[in-house]
Length: 312
Ligand code: GLU
Image (tube, rainbow, N blue to C red; front, side):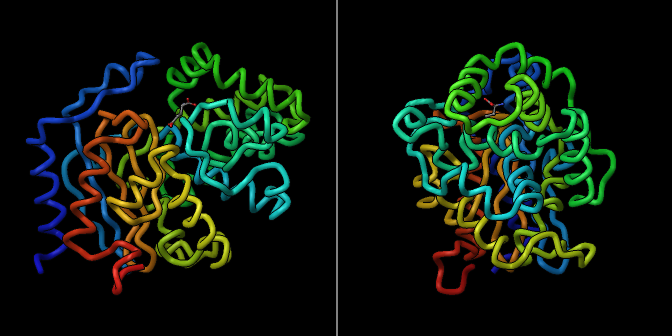
């Protein structure tokens, strides 16, 4: 088998020439202006070896990938009581859908659809000021990646706020059911800022290390979550990480993953690697078109799918 270094370089070269690059999100200028020709990949193995290619060090808007980190933080703060207010089932609907909330009494299906992530942001906010909660999320992600240069892009956060009518509707709707405890604009302030986190593939792959290594940050040896909790977060990423495209992603890639409309995907090969890819063009479900293709090729060449006899 080719070395992982060669596999990663080959995939980046293949993606550079790929004709069908998907459609860049255009609901805010900060995303719409990104060149669809960009592609980056970073793979960090269990022993810390890192393989990078393409634009792996270029920061991009991680958007909904942040929901993995906010869920981890909220579980740490309030534990499994979180599940009284958020479900654990795939929704089969779009990331910003409101339909299920009516029949399900304002309890979102899972923490990775927007409604679920807004409830999680509400929990992190608690009695704090939004600026403190936002600072806590930023500090957490910086410590996971061991990189204090990670930042929140204020321009993106402001644009999310100005155009986030659906998220505002979701939040108000859940507040009406009593499933949002803090004032809507304060909770959304937290949510919009976490979506505006800017990180590179390299930083993201480092930040995801604890999910590869049973809850331990492999770079520092610090326990971030229990082994059971890491396993459960991975399960949710597998079943819900790509909204109504989660089944397709499991079918093609077979790894826990979380997409963001900035074109990033964080994928975890438990015990083997933490992987981040970025290409801004999206498929109709909001998952990076080339990011998913690159991950599909990576698992084909490494056998890392959790459904391989040797995988997982
Ligand atoms: N900021 C986006 C929203 O809330 C995130 C969606 C995504 O990345 O899937 O609509």
